[in-house]
Picture 1 (tube, rainbow, N blue to C red):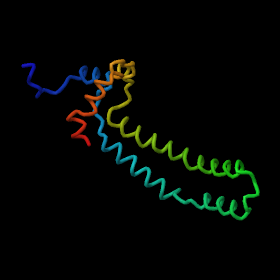
Picture 2 (picture 1 turned 90 degrees about the vertical axis):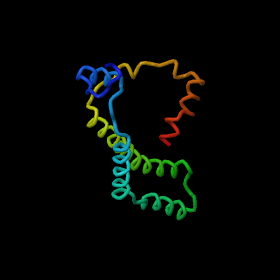
Picture 3 (picture 1 turned 135 degrees about the vertical axis):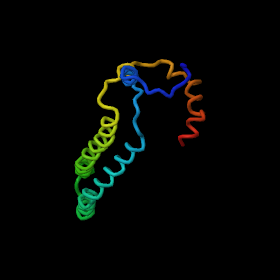
Picture 4 (picture 1 turned 120 degrees about the vertical axis):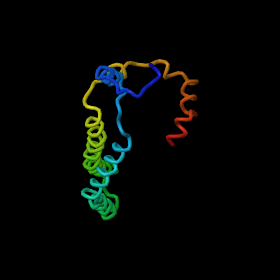
Length: 135
């Protein structure tokens, strides 16, 4: 009877597996949300006119100012575009996972696992049939 897995898991068993971090999450849905969010960001903020403006200023000034000033300007504009993009990626990856599995703090999944540092086990995972199937 125990080898027969046609019965649905009980609510307690589902909660226990969620605490271990073994809840179902579709990776394809998360990837699709990240892709759509990235495309939406690039369409709305994808203009590099500010970067090109700085390059034009650098060339027009004949490099009279220090490179640190130019680098600071490029860095500031880079952060202006990068921080919202990183926040968007965080939301687009966390939101579908939270909607699928709910918010459960998997304490057992957060515990350090020293056997994961074993190079032999890592090589077994790297060359396993599951890895071949997933790629």
